[in-house]
Image (tube, rainbow over all chains, first blue to last red; front, side, top):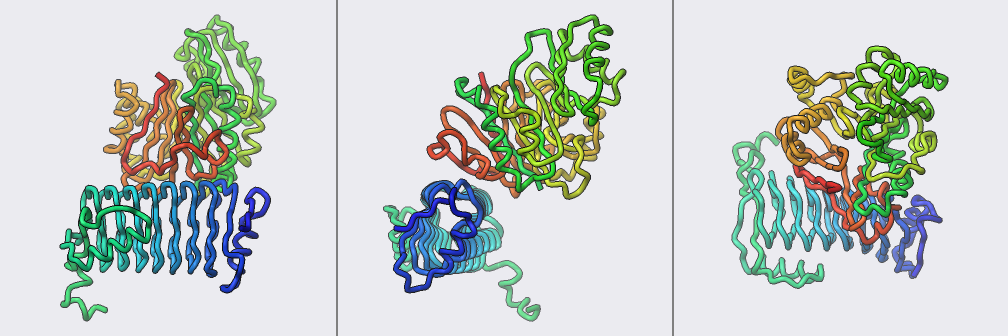
Length: 227
Length: 299
């Protein structure tokens, strides 16, 4: 394992070193120590490496991730794994607002709670939260899945498109055009797979599913000409 | 843009280290506020019947000792003055409601930064590290402290618009955000007898909470009332003689992170300011929820 101490090496050097690794690199396991809440740590990775961040971290950690696995052994700030393309990001503590924002692929696992706007404008990412999510989560969610093992705050899934939301606890309120939907065997199977890949032992049958009613302006056939 | 920090010590054994930790927290917010910084520290209480007032005059050669002497003669009380940078800490052996009118009437050239029996307030231009060093923050013991760093975007780098705002005895507020109904609220508060020193929206929030507390509301009740009456964006951190409160608006777009363990509670705009607190790695750390009042009290 390669260990880099962020007290001794600048964040810019660390990011450049990780970003510069070729896809076939043998240096696959990395540990970053003393992160002290730095912003934009381990962003833009493209090689299939595994990076462990040993402590609490700041904004936009593991943003734009492709193929890499980033594990944060602590709490993370705003926008963890924002616009992730593929790979996996695991947060062992809690996450602040906008976790997984605009994510296009990959898996984001948050073992604690996530703040407000978790999965805002998600575009294909799968997000599994072991705890609860804050208000306005999955706002304008377009594709992908948000799994919440705890509770969801107010206005879940406001103006949602095609993303699938699964919540085990209570939902404070649903946002505009977000409704509860039937849990079919197909959804149970998909949810089961997501929980398993996140390493969470929970019965898919104990969840409820939410999604788009498809009744807002952009879904109405009369408005097709406007596009 | 600005950064706010607050530290509230639950374990009295940590009190000698209050200033040292707040200094680290303040420096952590240098990138969010490199232009000026302000601190309010609750420490070294004066005895009952005495008052402590922090004063400001831009001239570091200001005749502070003459002011203290004149005050002593006029009110026939003992006074003590200690200059720090362009500030001075005045202690008078009488309640503040005798000292403040005299200062306002006889020294309009001096700005009253804060008053009470505990709170001292210093605000100055420069990097947070330089301001902290100038006022000897690291050496200040005490129970709780609040700080603010400012990046000036809409108005000049001056001390009068700087936080913390100190609307009442031993009370201070820092604010990240902007209020949209401050003009109406200011009018309403003026009718209720509150006097304003600036046109700043954060001062309106500070005096709003001061008014609620003066009407008998608890810290929690005052903050809850603010959720109804204050319209706009805010992350507030407020200190009172024995209390500490954090409040965010319902949209919560102004950043905040809280950390707590058995020894202390800390608030900051970003985790960077909390990174060096003792035992932070084992503390509970979370983002305060929108429209939710968080309060702590020494008693």
